[in-house]
Image (cartoon, rainbow over all chains, first blue to last red; front, side, top):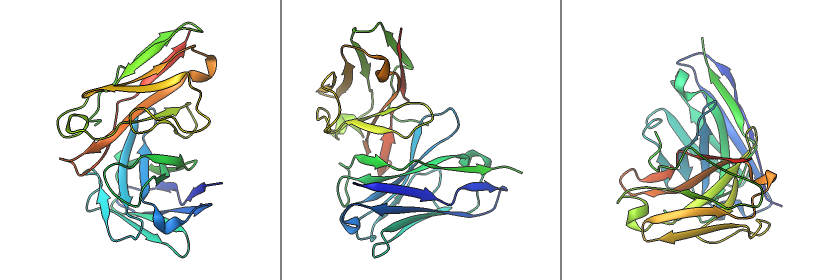
Length: 122
Length: 111
């Protein structure tokens, strides 16, 4: 069974940093792209970042480009989202998800983790 | 800000059929990129219900179906049941943004 478990969320002040982790099991981790999607309280889904299976290609939404960094450790079956210069509008539940393919535009996301809440507030 | 537009809400009585549209532009759906659909019960994680416009993952009831006519994808839920309530999101890829995009979301209510 494919399982994804996020960790690392919490309460931080504006301008601070946080690193989210997503531990995977049940599939050949390096063969699939991994994705981060966030959902602000009461709002819809927003794609944040993606990384290819090999880790050589990364992609970011404009809203986080230059502040967030996605990475992965394939032997450890874990991928990460390093979030710097956090702002109040980054407050959201962050979900990790598995892509259907190693990379590319035709990916869909299945399954999703349970999510981890990030709150940015002074 | 979502790039794909969906109706905010749809509702129907048990047993009826509801349909949700997903409208994009020439850089995403209009460019031929696949559309996928997710169902989210508030407070829980999203779940894939349709991929590649019309394909249903195992375990998703055949009451849920996806269709696409040109650049107009839609999701239909027939034989509406209480378990179908929640939010539905479409998702595609946008070549101008070089990233994935979601719809604005549609709240389905069973009356």
